[in-house]
Length: 161
Image (cartoon, rainbow, N blue to C red; front, top):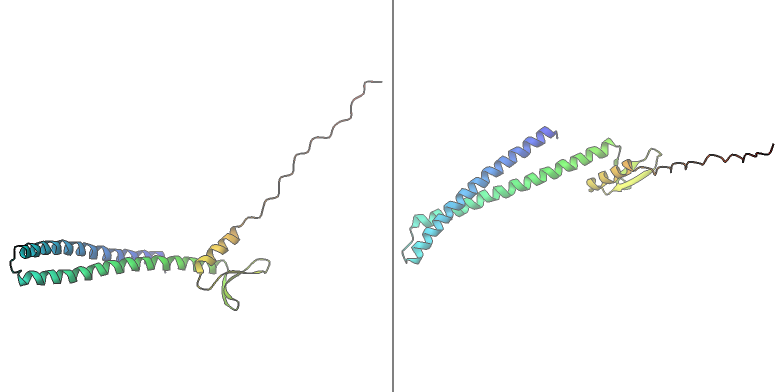
């Protein structure tokens, strides 16, 4: 999935979630007013209006519906983010030459010397990408710089001649 498409999907999901959140907050405020009105009617021992009871039950249902949409869009955004990360990891593994084998099962990579290295289990794409990156970027220890040698001592000059 291209980054532009992923960004557009995330933006659309966020907009839907924000719109549902605004609707839920507005419904919550209306429901609070209706509940306060019902409380007043019940404390004064008046018979509550049948329409008020319908408004409360309808408001509670609408609040449930819109809040569910908010939760679902948040969940979808998380899933989209995780899928994008998994896609990046998979792309990295394939680009660097890692292979998902069935026997031996898991992600493997062949070094330039021809060694087969196990990276991770088949469902651990993130871990495999991390291990491969560590392996590729691992620096070999640098050879210590040679110690400067002192210039050879000249034989003492004799003054006997």
